[in-house]
Length: 443
Image 1: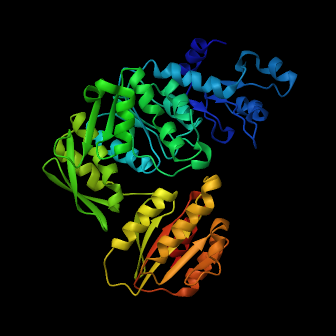
Image 2 (image 1 turned 90 degrees about the vertical axis):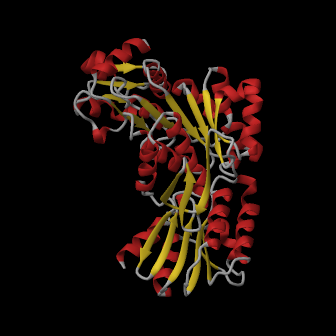
Image 3 (image 1 turned 120 degrees about the horizontal axis):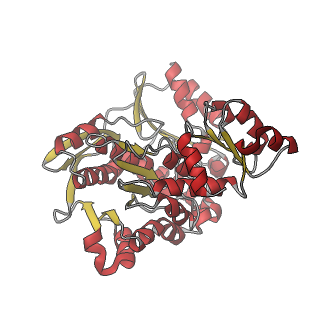
């Protein structure tokens, strides 16, 4: 079946689904498969549950074709077909598409930009963390092309050529890289691989007449942008940062606790913890200004935004203050969180860090975890708590507590009976350190 014909069926459907547990009448079901699942096995169940068509690359039973006829669409590869369909749908858009990637802060930045743009436009944007090879095409296909004025698409990546592959069907008009840091360095093959992989977005924009929003204070990104855009950079880059000469300039007024910035002749007091969120906020301000969102609306959007999903959240737990930043972690974000924690003032009985291991570091893992441990050794802390196998070397280190599992750390926290304490909880998603938060909420 041609993509054009499949697109006709998509337009007639009630939407795309890949999960038989959430089938709605007239859905178009795509039977994806991976290392641990094969949805081809559930194609019949999808059709029986009300899906109008099922797209498969394996036929489970020969009788299926006899029973369902044209409702069973057999393709060579379901995932690539889904991506091609998303790309075809994207070609119908008459509104701009902004793509966002980066090592740290891309989801928070996406949320901030969406909050700002929604003050003036009907926007569509990536929900949650649907920023991979499956989530991105699903996001595109969820967009109503007739009732959307701007789209913001988040793109995550853990290896080279991944961002480039997404650009083939996202086809962004604008791009933003939040930063490049020590994230997923196992897959990227080191820091230079991260830079190369993330800036595939710049390369695509340079070849397709796109524009980029860029932090002028970031020397690495500016150099890479100049490499790809050359003499055209000044015409195709919209700059933000601390310099008064850029398109959108700002500076930090306060950042040790909740971040407050001065920009657009206005003071914006956010509910984001940490001055490392400054560039995230400024990118949203810059994009709002570029798309003519009134300053008052930009300010209101950013001041009203409340971080969720364990991202830089400040939480009161009894008499204790918890900085919960357990959604993800890499060496760059870990060091930034620790640096900010050092700067937090207040009369606390105890200062505590609970740090989970960092994933996808490959051969760099041991050294990076040791650097984090050594960083804490120079901090005025009452408790240093480490969780996970890659921090196991801290087990017998003076002044350190090590637990193999989050449940063990949670038990320690329960027995410690802390009061009037400042606590940082930071770790990779795989650690599940938010379970410590669940305990906190029970108190």
